[in-house]
Image 1: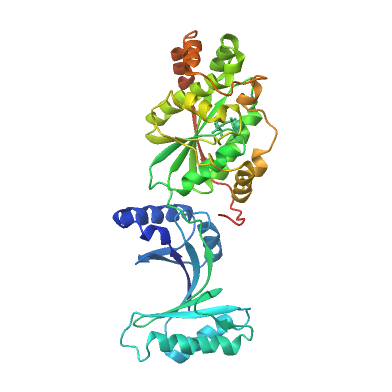
Image 2: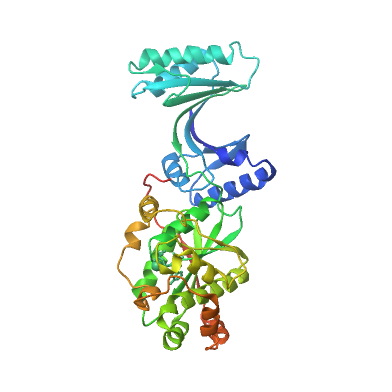
Length: 393
Ligand code: ATP
Ligand code: MG
């Protein structure tokens, strides 16, 4: 008997036009995640099969890979004799609790002396006889036992774990994630990755107003995000001079608006340089003064690149719930200052006017400051931490 894992990638199979590219990317992502282990991978018809001596480790890692719908434990046997299949199934079920179940048989060897229905019926009988708590439910069973009979091998697929769903990271190209140390932006990054976007982070620091510890926190958040994509590049931009210039020259109620316009401009340029097609950030409608619709419009006005806001329509509590599930929450709530929190005015404007933004910005030579900030760029490639799986999405 050989043990194996079967991977189902449900959502992918609906994308007819791109299916080859999707599967190739998923396979590449899986191979990268398992590169330190011994395994072989085969694929056929909407599923992948992984053979290895270390299936526990592999199963645990697969739970972090987007594009996987279901991870199923499988057993491969050299006999297709019905008596052997019955005995093999009996051994698998004899010591476990089963509530409702059904057996589904696929018979790719058409010369087999029994039909699929007949095999399912006989094997259902084996479960009922050996597991007293079990009941057949063909409509909504809690456990599906898949059986497959091929020319000279038989398979039993048993016990599935949900995967992360979504699309394999990379199939949608790149997005530049504005990553602060807060709760929202790592969640935004996770959700964008779930749609197949490879994320690169951009973090604006303002030393000495922001500390090395605050930067460390952002690096740690990046590390957690890289659990879901193998690695994440982080671009660190020195924002001090811009921030000080804004603080000195601009009416304070417009500090945040202008500061964010500067961040957007820089992020767009870094995105273009790195071939990222969109900006992703953690803005959520109405959460703070800079996230009213009028503010968002005034800030968004300075860039042409699309800005995707995955958490725009979520409540803070919903965002927190996701951050706990994906493992970023505990790091996000550590109390290090962000460059925005240091320069927060008492009364930020809630409905900023575009002409005022433009007028204030004309007071300062921002173009040179922006170029200077971009020259300060430090690029780090951050790879994943040790795996720890908690009930993921
Ligand atoms: P978060 O919890 O992600 O920090 P927030 O609720 O604190 O978000 P803001 O500080 O207003 O909201 O920032 C909104 C978004 O702008 C953030 O989610 C993030 O995408 C981006 N952002 C804010 N500060 C920075 C920074 N220093 N570097 C990079 N991006 C930032
Ligand atoms: Mg923040």
